[in-house]
Image (tube, rainbow, N blue to C red):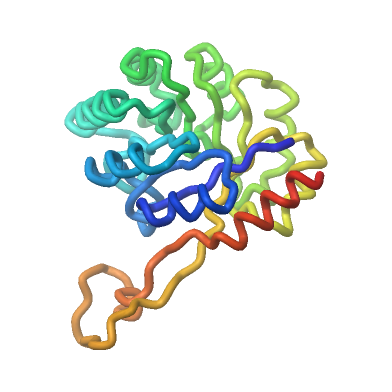
Length: 245
């Protein structure tokens, strides 16, 4: 049976995903940035209250995955903090300027994790050569690779995901990006062991007073009054479909 990982942005999302039957959580902040390292407060509360495995993301900023010395130093400090809290794994990825896995820095990451389960995230989808990256990540000992098959969605990238799965028994190839209930049969037919989904929805703010002339973000003003949440019903339906298969 395929494992279902849910991407969660905060404690409320993580508790919803757990209650709905998720197998594992990728814990992030900043959905508009595609996921950044959660705050110490969120990390501590999730560790205290969530019973299923939680893997925080270690990503200091949005954008590409080629980091400055200062950014990399902050990543190592975040890894030490996450490891100190007792999380069983984490999610990260580092590339060099030529689009290759930065093996020098990733070796330091693996040493800092010291036995934690490491997922190399969708930085893999920005790699110059997925096959070279797979060989290097295998040698580094990462537990899994999260990928959309170097396409906008995992459905579109299923051909490469299938080939990666056939070539790799370790690391695990986990399909992610646009994975929904309707697409589960496609991945199950290809024998994909782990699936990653946001199972998300936007929820309207409870605020009644709204100032249409002021925005606290770079997006549309209307986005100030919605927030991302995990859809528990969707998680339950996805998990039921996986169990039924």
